[in-house]
Every structure is written in structure tokens, then in C-alpha cells.
Length: 154
Length: 108
Image 1 (cartoon, rainbow over the protein chains, first blue to last red):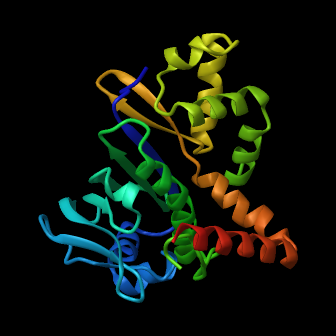
Image 2 (cartoon, helix red, strand yellow; image 1 turned 135 degrees about the horizontal axis):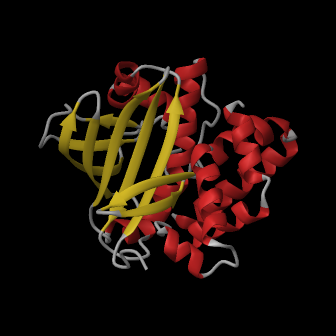
Image 3 (cartoon, rainbow over the protein chains, first blue to last red; image 1 turned 45 degrees about the vertical axis):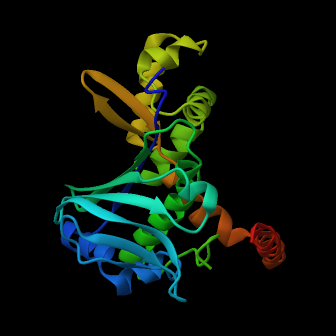
């Protein structure tokens, strides 16, 4: 069996946009808020920078640090849950964003992983990511999002 | 063939749906691992995986010379948004919102 001591998800979407536009949408707060259920991210997007995901009321959902960054191609974030005790207790996960131009679209690959088996954090984020990516795709391709709420971020 | 056609065609085959279920149960399997528990030829599994990959339902990562297959649920979310959600009656949505609200309150 593959790496039994790790939990790991890979999500891929193709968005009809440019890498530069997608990178902007991934790193600018006024964009993030639109597809990430009104949550935003505080970060200055340099290697070693702290990274925080914040609800409109200022409370934190997740925190971490930029481990690697290579705009507009790749970014790796250390990602630690803050709002649910059993998820917070699992410690930090690692989230990688890869942007690859393909024809007139960009292939966005998100890999989210943690060094423990059957991670509840990974299970929890695996529920959120498809909606976020679907919203992101809708926003960049049509100007609107489809889904407007999500547990933990309302 | 459009992306939507590729996607629906990929889902239309029971063998491919079984592969998706296997990956959902244990993600990141190699071709050999997948063949072990399925009543399909290696060639059959290879062909199915190629169709699933073309439809973006399976994403691959390399680990050395091994090819690992991951279930990518994002297109399913996209189908849900495009083909299911918009046809739902408001009452169903209200019921779902109530359920979610009650379950969230229960968690606090």
C-alpha cells in the first residue's frame, strides 16, 4: 500500500484564464473573499512570511507560513487549523499550489498533505477545496460564484 | 468532445465508477495496487485510468518511477453546481440550510 503513514489529497482544475490573473486571484484579499466564503488571507507572500486565514469578524480559521513561493508558478504553505480543537491538535499540514498554462487555460493543482495516517484535517479540507475551486473557476470565467456558504466560515 | 462530454462519458462506465470508489476508499494507489482488488485485466484498468485522467477525475503524481493515482473530486463539484444545484427546488435548499445550521450549532 502507498505511504501508510501519510494523508494526501490532490485536486486539479482547469480555469480559462492566465497564470497572472489566477495568481492575483489566489493572493489578493479582495478576490479571495469572493470565492472563499468571505474569508480572507493576510500575508505578504514572501518566503518565511506568516500566513493567516481570517473570517470577517477577525477570528482565525487557519494559520501558517509561506515555505516556498515562485510567482506565478508555485507556492507551498504550512497550514495549521485554528478553529477546531481536534484538527488543530494534528499540527501543521503542507499545501502546494501549482499553476501550469495549458492551451488557453491554466491547470491549477492543489496538493494538501500531512504526515499522519487518516488525518481528520485532510478529510475536513477535502470537503472545502472542491467548493472553493469551483467558485474560483466560476469567478474567473463568468464573474460570479455558485456557492456562498461553508461550515466554519459562515 | 467537450470537457462535459468527456466527463459524463467517463462516469457512464461501471468499471470506471468502481475504480473511483476504490480510490475514494484508498487514495494514491499505483496501477498494480488497483489491479489487485478488482476483477479486471491490467489492460482494462489501464484503459479506464486513461479515460478518467483525460476527464480530470484522476490526477497523477510520480514517486520515483511509480505512478500514483489520486481521485480528483473537483469536476464532480462542477457537475453538481452546473447540473444539480440549479435544478433543486427552494424547499430542498431550505431544508439543507436548516440541517447545516442545526449541525453547526451542535458543534459549538
